[in-house]
Amino acid sequence: MAATDVALWVPLASGALGIVGALAGVGLTQRATRDREDRRWERERELDQVRYERERLERQRERRAALYVDIAEYVQDQQSILELTTDEYASRRAEIPNLQHPDRLTARVRLYATPQVDESWSALVRAVEGIDWEWTEGDINHGTHGSWLDPDNAAVVELDKAIKKLQSVLRATVDEET
Image (cartoon, helix red, strand yellow):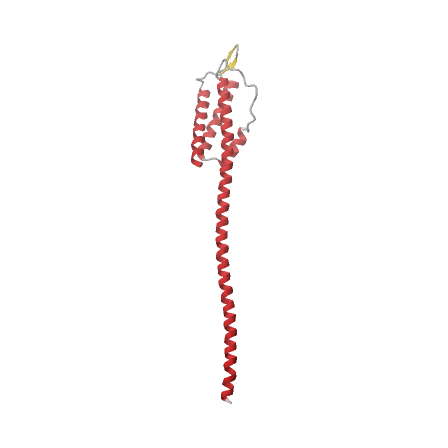
């Protein structure tokens, strides 16, 4: 009877070990699969973060480029106006360009521009205000061809300097970012 009992337990023990082994194999496989999926998910998340950062930087570059073009157009307009207001014989412009208001540009400069562009833009805005004051309250020359400011007027010199500085800073900034 003892031999029969051993004979019964051996197949049962072998079967139980087989079942335990199969379950352990499934568990280990699932764990390995889960770990592999977690690593894959982490890699995808990191790639998504890199993609998001690239896209964010690209959008920022596009916004800055659009801002710098708007600033350059505004600066060119101020330069043209300055040339007209300092030339006794200049003919007046027939058409005023469609440009953004300086306050809108200032808001965008504060959001997107580099500190150097911000500083140069602020100097230009102050210089334009100085010219506006000179034109309304200052020493204006009147002649048969119209009114004009002297080219050596302090406000004219300051605006000319601010225009040249901002143009230089814009060029340098654009060169750095490309």
